[in-house]
Image (cartoon, rainbow, N blue to C red; front, side, top):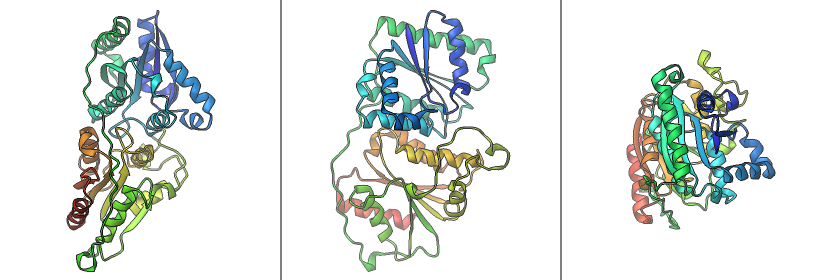
Length: 365
C-alpha cells in the first residue's frame, strides 16, 4: 500500500509533524509512505508545470492520502493554501476524488479545530473520503499512550483504504452566486466623519469592477474624511512565513523585506482596520494567509490590542461557519481587539448591502 503524505509545513523534512509520520513508518513497515514537501516547494510548483504535474500524478496513484501539517495562525500554512489554489486554478481536482484521506497535525492545541475543519472541508470539496483527524501535542511522540493512539489512527486509515467503507460529509458544498453589486452614492449628507480616527482598509486584490472593489469603494465613500487603502500586492513581501522562529527572540523577522515596517508603521498605527477579501474555497486567498502568517513575527504577543476590526467579504460567508470563527478569533482571541462585524455580498440586494456598509461605517469607530 502507498500512502502519499502531503507535507504542509514549509520546514520540509524538519517539520515536527513529519517526525510523527517517520514513527509510523517504523510501525507499518509494509506501507510505502511517499512524502511530498508541497509547502516548502510551492514556488517551484508555481513556476514549473512539469513538477506540478508530477506531484498530481503521484497523488493520483495513491492508495490513501495523509495530510501532515502544523498549526499556522488558526489554520494551515499560506504555502499549503497556495498549493490548493493551484489545484483549483489548474483544474486537477479529479486527482483527489474518491481518495481515502486523514489529517495529522502537531500544535500547542490552540484552535486546532479550525485548522482541522478547514482541511476536512477542503477534502470533502475535492470529493475525498475523509476518515479521521488527529491533533497531537508537540511532545506527544515521547508519550507511550499517545504513540499508540497515533498507531490506531494510521491503522484506521489503512483499513479504510483497504475495505473502502462509506464516509460521512460534515461540510456541505459552498454555493457561490453571480450577483453583481451596484452601489449607490451615499450623498454628502449621508457621509460621516472619522472623528480624527485613522481608518485603514486592507485588501488582497483591488479590482474596481468586482463586487469586492465596489464594497471597498462604497465603504470608503461613507466617510467625509480620508480613509486609507492598501492593496497587499503593493506591499513588499518576499515570501510566506517559514516557521524559523527567529522572531521569538526579539520580534525581528528573518525576511529583509518591507513587511515588518509596513505592519508596524501603518497597520498598527490605525485605529480602525477593515480587512477585505474574496472567498477562495474555504478561506480567503493565500495572500491573506501570508499576511496573517507573516504578522506572527509578533509571536503570541497581541499587537493590535484595542483596535476596531471589521471584515468585508465577497462570497457565501454564512455558509462557512469555520471561516467566520477564524476571522472573529483573529480579532478577539489573538489580538484582544474589538470585533465589529462582517459584511458580505451574499444578501444579493444592492440596496441592502449599501445599508449594511453604512451601518458598518457608523459603528466601526
